[in-house]
Image (cartoon, rainbow, N blue to C red; front, side, top):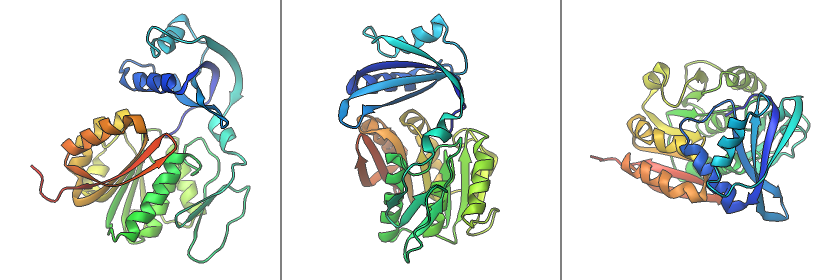
Length: 307
């Protein structure tokens, strides 16, 4: 996932459950202006129940913009703070200088920190960029842990796809675990294509259509001829958002092999029931689950016989 630089920000402070409800309302707002990027987070680590909802805009907020943000809170919207920001790549800025993470078999670091160079540990160099996914977010780190757990339980992968790849990190991690797999990475944002290509080169991961190589495409969900042609997949990864996961569940069911694995993240624990329900209808059953804070990471497997 990625977002463009923005010059204005709307902030609303509210209890955690109120902000999470607003995020759910945002996912159901099908007429939402996609130039307005929404996120929710803790105000501070020592105040876990105090959250903020932030909306970034590439323009000065209009009355309609403010009304749309207020509408996410129903009839009890908190006060909105409007801030004019200098032109800044906020995703890159937020990722600069972040501490490396060690998760499962992986050590993920930016150029600000050295590789570990330890036996049995795969160093992955992921610079700060306009694409999301340097490993520090709980969902990305949880996916790394789940991939390692899947490998330990004997999962075999010949074809994999990473939907919403961002920096390509999860694709690279999966290829380390299954080095002969055919890997397809996709994202809806075309800024991710050069990012993935550059990151693959820095991590000595080949590009192309053969075993052990990555093919990158720009696509909305599964809507791309190459994604269809390279399937079906033994492993499909989607670290995106709960709303799209529910919408894409039938497509996932159609493109994952019987007995194949589906790794989902980007959903809050409060959204897990809806995602699992959609995936059950698409022919999947739960095989593993990790909870990191407020986030769920789900491993599901496609039933071998499903009607």
